[in-house]
Amino acid sequence: MYKIPSALAALLFLLSPICHATDAQTADPDALFDDTLLEEALVYPDWFKLSMGDLNDDLAEARNNGKKGIITYFGQKRCAYCEQFFKTSLSDIDIQNYLRKHYDIIAFDIWGIDDITDTDGKEYTERELSLHYKTNFTPSLVFYDIDGTPVFRLRGFYPPYKFRAALQFVVEEFYKTEKFSDYFARANPGEYFLLGGLTERDFFLEAPYDLSALIGNGKATAVFFEQGNCHACDLLHSAPLSQELSVQEIEKMDTIQLNMWADTPVVTPQGKLTTAKEWAKSLELFYAPSIVFFDDKGKEIIRVDSVTYFYRLWGVLDYVNRRGYDKSTDYQEWRLQQREVSQ
Image (cartoon, rainbow, N blue to C red; front, side, top):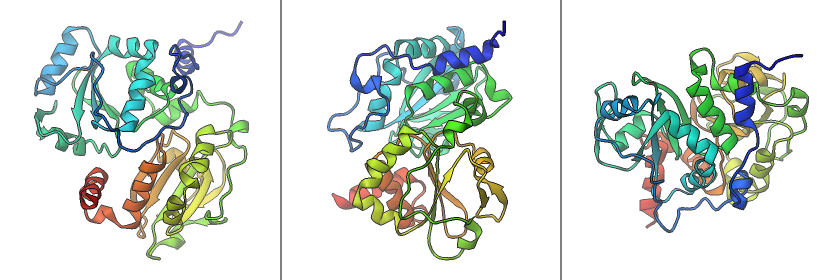
């Protein structure tokens, strides 16, 4: 009788659709939620820890308690995506117990001004540390191993099954031998199902897909990486991309839709002939849908590769079309600038 390898069995267990909470949103992690700013500030779970000011001290405490390392959590007080992370992944008892067994989680506010010393001895404010680790979207997590080396970053909100897989990926140290996108692909259904039809939209350019031909036309390019039988992809099109404001911004760009599992020929902005599948793999994409934005010179600006609804998507589209990347140090600073102007 064939025996499933232990590593694969653990992966399949973590990806199984177990859900112990009864809350409707927890039961369906893809359920839509309002992603505007929360009216009331979030409260961290009581088992989160606040840094002692030096992550090496935080790491030493974790090591003394038999942990494998620490996780730094970067969030915002009124972040709807952070709230969903607390309500879904962190309310799942299996996930919570697994996380707390192996890590201490240290909470930071991406706008915080408290001084923090990273494990390499460099000093930052909370804000500067969040910029250092390019936490464009909250919640973001940075995993440190027992020696204080940052080994993995998870940026944005993901369904519990994907967060569970990320935990397993780091705890079992698969990051030493493979990328998370490759690791996670092993748990996907067969490509026959992933190659199903995609949602057609008028704003997508038709093949052939030669992105190098778009260089210098003064417009940004948005590449939608999707897959068949994808509930999250359907939600992207039926919710945020059904809004007229989103469509207006999308139509200012050149937009291309690719099935990230297909052998569709593509010429990248850098002029490399490849396929949609190989390009998605080289970009280390592991979430569908993912949208990668390039400027008119072919340089990547930003990517949206986590759960995204209207407010966040429109903010990114606005940032790209108004060339916010030329006017601010990062996406979060740009959004803060726009918020202050509107007040």
